[in-house]
Amino acid sequence: MILNSSIIIIALAVALYLAFSKRLRSSSCWKATVTPLASIMGSGFLISAPLLANTVGNFAVFCMALLLLLAYAVGHAIRFNIRHFEPIEHEKGTVQNIAFISRIVLAAAYFISVTYYLQLLAAFVLKAMGIDDEMYANVITSSLLILIGGIGVWRGLGELEKVETYAVSLNLGMIVGLLFALLVYNIHLLSGESGSYPTFHLQLIWMTFVSCWGY
Image (cartoon, one colour):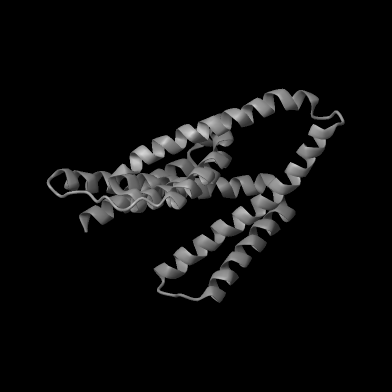
């Protein structure tokens, strides 16, 4: 009971500070960090990390390190393209045509990604309420898409960034609470309980790699 209360208090304290701190609100670095954080946390802390822990057990840390190295290598290729392509971006040629097609593909992939994560959110919410109904999940997902699109059309991207700031603050607060809980859990493991070593599932590990380097 005391542990649960401590986790909630820590999460709320961090979330409130990040959401309403005047210092952070006026910080250009924090504003530039919010959008990447919003993308990374959904696939990182909330999905990939628990999935790896469940898949490879105590080897999760090593798998994460390997995935990050591979993702950095892919990122190097992307950075190379940005460095050498952007100066000739507005010229005409085969490379520019490929880039134009890639933007269309990326936009479609982004819509699919957003819908996927909203579907996961709806499933988590319904599961917490003891409801297992695909129709309700689709209704929640569609409603959130309409809400996000409506805010963007009505108030512009600036208003969406404000909403994003509060959402990221809440997520970071929850993650800090989660890290505190994991710290307590690992202390209990070190006190004598043994860890688990599940069977490796290479398909799931590869999925987390694709998710990781994308951001």
